[in-house]
Length: 141
Ligand code: ATP
Image 1 (spheres, rainbow, N blue to C red):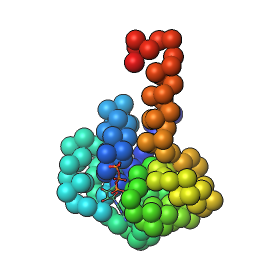
Image 2: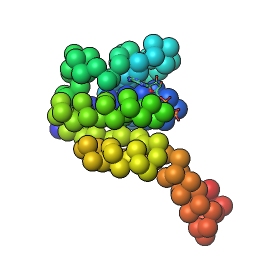
Image 3: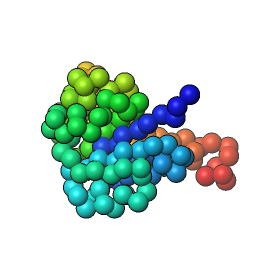
């Protein structure tokens, strides 16, 4: 069976970390960011890195985005760009869409427009840390 192909949109701290980790695990990763400098910073660590505004449907089509098995949307601060990107990806038929949310309300909108999984990195990490702190294996933390 062919290895899954991933695209990650938004090379902030979260997106670039996901893209690099997947690449280190041996998967094909397309990294996309509207900011050329951000794209350049990860270019050596992923399969392909391109600059594109993902609120532009034609740009996403041209990248063949629907052929990727999983697309991660890691745009946080610009909620409008996050929502528009998610909507377009859903319309284009991306099989699995994972989207980072900035707030509960943002996440709710993302779920309603078809995100398969919504991630709240800061909230989820906070929960993990709290659970680790109270676990009997605290020395492993
Ligand atoms: P982190 O906390 O992971 O660093 P952040 O929420 O602070 O993320 P943002 O500023 O939201 O980061 O953006 C993440 C990346 O998404 C930025 O590098 C930004 O250039 C990119 N980005 C924002 N809008 C678009 C867009 N329309 N198309 C493509 N990339 C975009």
